[in-house]
Length: 437
Ligand code: CMX
Image (cartoon, rainbow, N blue to C red; front, side, top):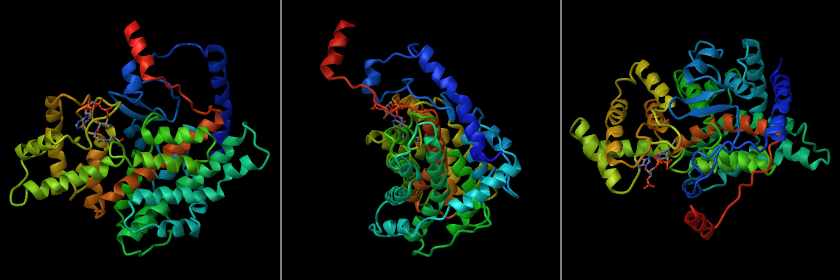
């Protein structure tokens, strides 16, 4: 069965489960809210639903029930590669089913049709000041696509109905995931390669095409595939996924929703941390290692300097995770098995930080999780392959994250999730409840 028919069947099978939960068990209590959660960013409150991925604090992410190694193992691989295509992963995220090779081929073919980006998107990006952050460019590019939103068109058609609204979200979502790598490549070439643009390679899958469009080597094709898949989804409560879900819950179309999600991803406590890691590491090299090899003592001193100046150590800590992020481990394993990369001085330094930083953070005593997250390891791979412009790294994150966010809002509409509207209270109310115990 083709992707859309499989998804339709899955959504229709799922709907009665959601309806039953609301109708028969709607008042069952699954959590309670404390004052520190109210003030502290709603941390851990169970109030979102997604079946696309689940984040266990000890184990890390599972996509559709599969760990990262299980996901990479299960999905059909790109020709001549150890990694699956992004297209096969898209099928898997949307449906929860591992696609056959024939189903993957169909998605790859459809992806190619959908990936053409209208000229006005490039014109909108080009009109921005050249010094604009690439995340601004990406967010503007996605927002510019809104003009042709099929969901918005359906809403305005006078024929809108809740039962098949998801099909129009699906159309936009699919267009968006196919186009965002092309927009990202355009931004890269515009900003860092003197506007030397390279056209789409119609014979290539998403990862290979992205590598070629930014003028990269063959080996980078797997980097792109791995990177986009690893960054795709981290259940629903993180800033980018939650923002996308929230904005779409007002029936804003996928372009409005994901442009907003990208703006959240651009924050230094979220996706921008990957650029901050490289910035920190390169500055460390320049300051401490001009004439000497880095040592654990030097790294320890630099980490304490950062903490004592009131800054966070980028790439370490997490709101949910309490162990090393398996997305970190997966990228580290990629480095260790890649000749050249495993002996690269920057990788060795990142590995040394991994040995030292958790102990420093534990001694510092604030962070609940002293272990590295995805951002601590991602930049060094890009750097090694020559993508040294680290303000671009969050754009790469944003290309990957689109897969999860778009799969999620397609299901949001499929299951008819309501407009999001939590309740706020005032400080005097909290003080009164505090006194009452
Ligand atoms: N370095 C220094 N202090 C840290 C820290 C770190 N890496 N991680 C957490 N802390 C501090 C917090 O700032 C907080 O301090 P205050 O009490 O003074 O406010 C305290 O430890 C408790 O924080 P927490 O409950 O452990 O963590 P939060 O859930 O509040 O925040 C996160 C999570 C990721 C924002 C935080 O760990 C952090 O700032 N890390 C560095 C930035 C980073 O790597 N972000 C990327 C996360 C992954 C992603 O989304 O891409």
